[in-house]
Amino acid sequence: MVWEDSADVTTGLMQSPDMRVRAGEPFFGYPAPLENYLEVLPIGEEGDDTILSWVDDFAPVYYFVPLYEENGTLAGAMFAWRETGNTLLAHRFDDEYASYLATRDHLDCYLGLQEAQARQAEHQILWTLLGSVALVKTDAGTYGQFFSDYYAEENLSQLHDFDILSSKVMRESELVQLFETMSDQIAQLHAEESQ
Image (tube, rainbow, N blue to C red):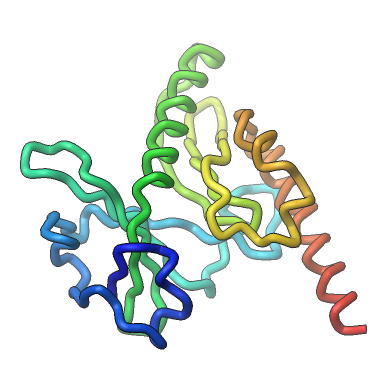
């Protein structure tokens, strides 16, 4: 189920979407084959000293879906997530996807300048309660940079200022430390709510 405007989406199932498509079919006339779906990895409340140990396998599955003109020009992007076993909800995500591309390019340039031996190995996207992270794994280590605070948890935003987070490239150990702090704050909030 697809919405043109992200503001129109609440739980999705309670509103009339702009249209309904099957995964892999075009959005708004733009091709969106399944190979365009970029998985977004949600970060949970527990992990250890690696980024991937924090991925929450039980969270909803999220995707960025870039849309292209016939000539290959980027026309925009969608954000999609699994609401139920066979239902994906999606809405336009153009600005945030453009921010992801710019941040990914910045990471590549930064690592090329700062780490002479770094080679691009793999890009991934993390979804956290503090915002989204563009991640790149290289032979010199794993690095990330925040690029969007869309749907970040409001009561956690005081933990770190997004402008500060998005302005720096962080090593995997720094990101893990941030997730640990975030997890501690979530536990504290839960404890306060249960009293």
